[in-house]
Image (cartoon, one colour):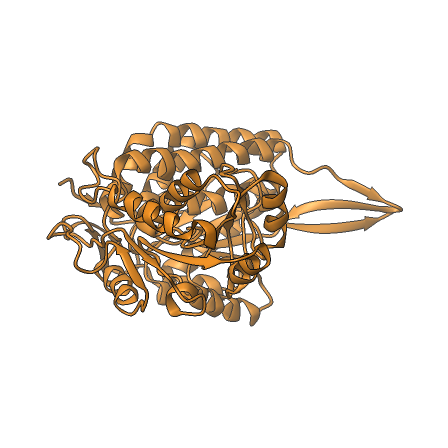
Length: 469
């Protein structure tokens, strides 16, 4: 297994030594072996990065749209050249099967970044309202704190938008999957963007994340992760009235109406729930099925789950890799142990490789809509199936959640669209509508504040000024 050791932060346009020699080890969740490390950053490292971002801000904010777009296009091309390496590193540090890693973990952020290069070159036009000229300006220095489950996409969704809007950035990636972020730093070095526009400091959340969230010169904090951590970041930013954008947890419902294409809805639904080994915030982990098709749906879901081959992420036959860590495995197994529902596939005793943080693809039927399994974000390959008797009941069950990030509805077009409009969630796929990386993405309720991706994502990183004439 290849070792990947990174010993410096990327600050002010160069790789610089960290404040201390402390390191964070990076484990391969399939072999359970340490294969890399990164610096354990400190408050001093954050201060240096924020200082570099502050120094670079005026110059970057003043660049023309054409210059900014061209710079992001160079960055995009530098990342495209690293597509295979991105997929390989994600496979090593997260355990995503290589085919999925290349298509989703590498492919999606490349598409998003290309979109932001285009938006940077063609920003929102000034608007005249009466005697006022309304203009869009960058917020300032942005602190970006990202999770481990999509280690490049979540970074690019923030960094690309922030830079396109004219801000400068200090990034803290997850300590579980930090190595992918270094490929982005390498691309910045190759693309020759101005020094200090992008800065990377690795480290632990309570140290580096807290230092970013509380720094007086960080004008905005953009965070993706758990709702609990999002609350802490909100408190830290609120003390100094800093802007916050949060993309948090989810417990999405996949509503299968009585006139749906049942086979397709169940197959696609299981695939969505198990994507990235279930470590996806938008996963449709609650499958709601009309009673007239309930037994058939349960049988189909169990059969589909049984077809998911578990194993080595670099084996082309693998469809489900390991979970990211031993702690995550223990957490997911705890939910299965406490489920209190009818197990129809997988479970704690299902065979999985002896080495690696594996949980078998698991399906429960007859799940109580108010139970822990139906209410809490499991973040593993665990699907809950719940029955309903009417469209109104389906909507009630779907909305019975503190979260509201994503969801799906299957049925005749107008009926499905009517139900989709009633779901209190930030995104809904109707009859298998594909993910749109340029549409606004974000949540209702405890799933977050603000939007990412496309023009709406760009707007999150802008101030609006009215100039009266």
